[in-house]
Length: 403
Image (cartoon, rainbow, N blue to C red):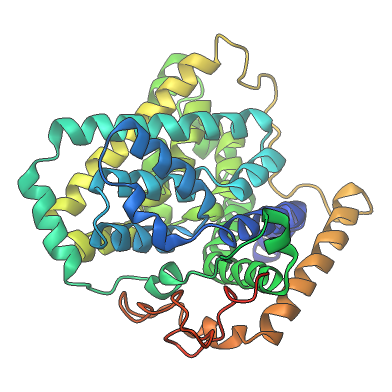
C-alpha cells in the first residue's frame, strides 16, 4: 500500500537520525544551561561586525525551533537589541545549530554540513548589508512600535524560559551539580517538545515525497538535463519549495535529502535548508510582530540572502571539489532497521534521553510544558528567582544552590 510505503520510509529515516538528534539536543541543552537569555539583548546594541558575530555565536548556542527563535528575536527587539542583530541571532539559532549539522551529515554527507556552517555566516553578512542599504529608520521604528504591542504569535512561552545555571564555580562544577543536571534535563525536553511537531511533519512529508513522487517530476522541476541552468535555478527554487511545504527547523533536512536525490543543485539544497524562516506560517507571525510592511521586507531580504548564500556555496565549493559527484545516494529511508552501529548508538542515546526525561518530570517539568505557548509577557518573571529560589511562576528555579 502506498501509505504504508511512505510510513516505512519515514520510519526508517527516523531510525537513522535518532541518536544524532538526541546527541545534538543534549549538547545544546548543556550550552543553554550555562548561557542566560536575559544577557543577550544588552550584547546586541548595534549592527557592527562585533555585535553581529556575538549574535551569531549566541544564536547558535540558543538552539530553538523556528517559531521559538522568531519569538525570542522579537523579545530581544522589545528589550532594546538592535533589529539587525536580532535578526542575525534568529538566523543563527535555526541554521547554525549542532543537531541540524549532525542530521544533515547522516542523511546527505559531511559536505552539506560544511556548507551549512559556511553558508550561515554568509547569510548573516548579506542580511546586514541589505538592511544597511534598504531598511529605513521609519520602517524600523514602526516595527519596534508594533513589537511593543506584544501581539501573540507562537511559542512565546518557550522562547521566554530561561533555565540557565548561574553562580560561582567552574563550568563542570555547575554542570554536574543537582541544579545543572536539572537545567540540562529541562532544556533537553523543552527543545524536543518545541521541535517534535515540525520534525514529525518533515519526516512524513519526506517519506511521502520519497515514496510517491517520481524522480521524473523532480528532474523536470530542477532542470537536471541542463547542468548550468540547474545551478542557476537551484538556489532560486529551493526556498520556494520550502515556503510551499511549510516544513521548518530540523524537519526540513529529511526533505532536503529527497530533493538532492531528485536532482536539485548543491546550492539549491543549501538555500532550501536555510529557508525555514520564510515559510507561510512564520510570515504571518512576522506581520503580527512587526507589521505587514516589515513582514514583506523580511520575506524579500531573507529570500535574497538565502539564494545568494546558495549561489556562493555552489560556485565556491564546485572548483574546490567539495560537491559530491557520481550517483546521488542521500539516505531517504531505503535502509531498513538492522543490527549495526546505528542501532547500538540509538540504544545508548535513547537510554540517555529516558534518563533526562525522567529527571524532567521528577523536578516539576510537567507544569512547564503547559507554559510553552503562553503570551509574550506571560513568562516575564521566569528566570528571575526570588530569594526563596522560586520564580514568578512558582516553579522552583535551578539557578540557586549550584555550588
